[in-house]
Image (cartoon, rainbow, N blue to C red; front, side, top):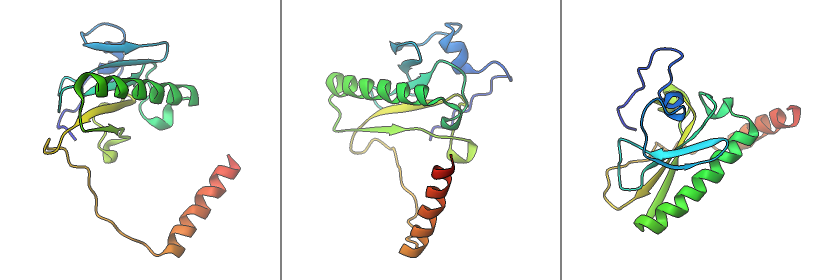
Length: 148
């Protein structure tokens, strides 16, 4: 992830200010719930951020309607990136919380055009737990989903 961290004072979220038009942005798309704009830290041409307009720090703070709108906009932008820049790949990235590598604490998705040696690395160590452990994890999740 990039080394940019939003240092805005509390109550002055950089993306909220951008949505409000208080700071400039190269806007790509806007609808009732979302705003898509060029990432100022472009990794590759066509690197776009899709943010919800209402301040919500993470995915867990979104309404279902906002989450669906963000993915609709991300898909629409990804199709435009493919048409405009013809990258061989596209990555969607969304981070939650400091430990999840989130650096701006306002929900957003990265739509990143990808190329062979572009310097982006998305890898982690595989742990390969036994199938019985995976079944236990699934059971825990099913229990939460059934209760909620």
